[in-house]
Picture 1 (cartoon, one colour):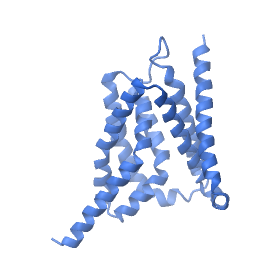
Picture 2 (picture 1 turned 90 degrees about the horizontal axis):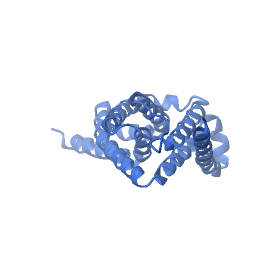
Picture 3 (picture 1 turned 90 degrees about the vertical axis):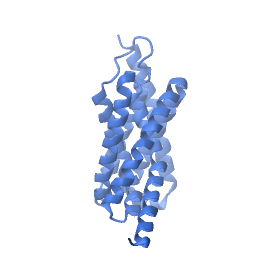
Picture 4 (picture 1 turned 180 degrees about the vertical axis):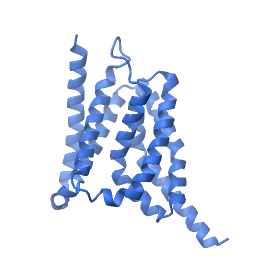
Length: 226
């Protein structure tokens, strides 16, 4: 056994796991928001299936990330999609209160998780790919280890949302923040944002504000509907 290569493998694996810990916070929020309205028996299924599918999706994205990030308007479209997801999740906050709409099904929750993770992972996978250095076995193993981390984080977030509903609003704002950053990072805006770096922060703040405003308007409209 080559000790040097063995040490490099474990160091890279630790790096990937650590990257996943750092980058999994927003994913856990999305999963918790999407699954919180489900019956208790389905919540864990949505979290497990959504987390596992998101990791597989992230592996595929890692192989394609460099090429994907060079496509113009891709991140603008993705960011707009993420804004819509944030508005929908915040607008559904009333579910479970009184006689609101029926909660979304398991399939709908998993689709929401996958769509959100697809967009939120475009930038993140670059760091993971760099740590893996082209070793797909190492990449798959490192991301698979991240599954229980996301599951634990999602379950924790759901419990916190049940006790502190304000976290739902904070989580939706976080999704909007990431959406704004995603839009600002699109290749067609790189020249502008490189000259004016503050625009990235402004776009992130605008995304968070848009989700909060539109989400509350959507919720009020749904509540007032006959």
